[in-house]
Amino acid sequence: MSVAAASKIGEYSYRQFNVQDQNEFHSISSLISNHLSEPYSIYVYWYFLNNWPQYSFVVMDESRLIGVVISKVEPHREVRSRGYIGMLVIDPEYRNKGLASGLVKLTIEKMQQDNVDEIMLETEVINQGALNLYESFGFLRAKRLYRYYLNTHDAFRLILPLSDKSHTRIAFLDPIADE
Image 1 (tube, one colour):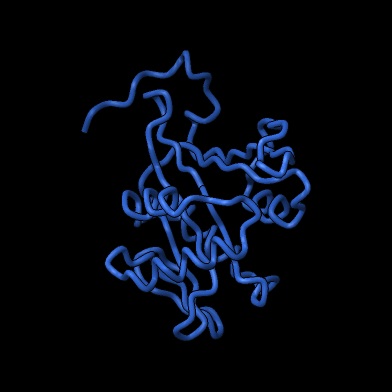
Image 2 (cartoon, rainbow, N blue to C red):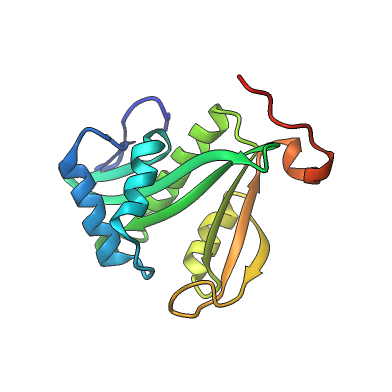
């Protein structure tokens, strides 16, 4: 599956989020509010989708949006480029079909193309499915965050190192050069 164009795997189509399509945004909003455990303000994902649409991908069943990954890339402490996977949701009717893996793969590939040094995310410690998914891509458990979520569940911060900068302490890295 290539980041550049829409891809079809079986009966499902993957593509980059279309920032011009208000219906697509509303479908994403509905999917998130109905199926994620953490209540996100519409402004949170609009901020991600509006500023970093190139790192967010959707999966469709014909014309129905059934999954989304919402991500961003920013400098981290002015010495690394850090990707962040903020939200991943698949309609429960379509889970366990590998769709989440396809979305995560697309956002990772796009970040690799853009020379991101590492990718970070948080997930509930009790969400074994998410932990299995991310660890299958090489994400490592970096930190336990106690009572991180509103439901008082703990989270793991996971990091996927992509460059040598990920393995170097911040204090020993030169600032990112302005381009």
